[in-house]
Length: 427
Image 1 (cartoon, rainbow, N blue to C red):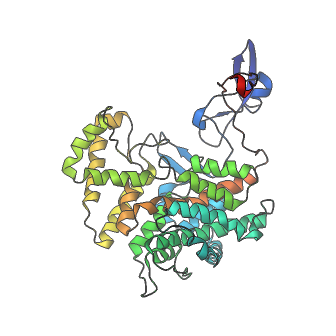
Image 2 (cartoon, rainbow, N blue to C red):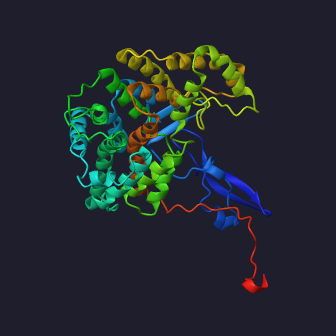
């Protein structure tokens, strides 16, 4: 018998089961709340509501812990590869060597886009935001790949999953190429997932492209660190869209649309712009004082997190990666020194310690991506590329969950009560 939570409402006591996860807070099961009490709960943003049961990702924000299928993110980022993490998120276990080889080969066989999609790109303006293009192209995939849209068929779901993971780098790279007026580059399946993406983005047909190992590793690490993050806004959007029975391409397009919001996917761009505004390390104390002033609109971007109330475990890996990339590319950028100095001063400042405003992954990822050569407009597109595997894993889990129902949040209605229609001549 599970523990029970008692609710006293309207002069009556009602009991609800308390569910326990393998780790994390207990959850009060209120599925029968309305039937038993005639009341709903009120939880804007669903910050105190578990919308599903999941075995994929666990976050303990207070302790700064992020686990994928039980494995700590820093171990995966430092010792694993993005292809391994994709397999892990999709299948629940780390692959054996033969399983990884087969999976990697399968993904590489799906990297090309239908040739007619090149024409689809040309329907956009050249100055279109890459996320606008990705929304459209990913949504359009269902018009090209009819053989993987039946969500009741496990084989079709698997093919759609592989296609989305494989094609997203091609879609993102083509969005970049289109914006700068350069020809599209076809995938090179002899390269790694990250290496192939870098070549499609920065290579040109006129000369061979040489993948820099440190940059390739940094890209792979960024993909790992953004692969999944539990029930965030875009993941919840994918699940909500999927709960209606929508095809997987439409669901991922919905996730991309949600991620495009600056409060979600645009944080690393905001952090980079903030570092550029600060400029040099000697100006940091002035900006820290401005950040403390409630009447000053300036805010330190890249600090603090909706979930993490401790150091973001992904930021530690990013800080190390920044140095590796800068050394490999011989970059001498004052932004990096400004970022390190700002982190150092903020971590010693009582104001930031008291409010638990620690650097998050966005604080460093923007600096790295800028050093590699990505314009800020591509930052969120890269986030979407990496997060696709998490969205797909969560979507697959939702489809096979026997308790899953179509999403239907309730509301606290505060509008007019019933009134009679008045003919227009009498108003």
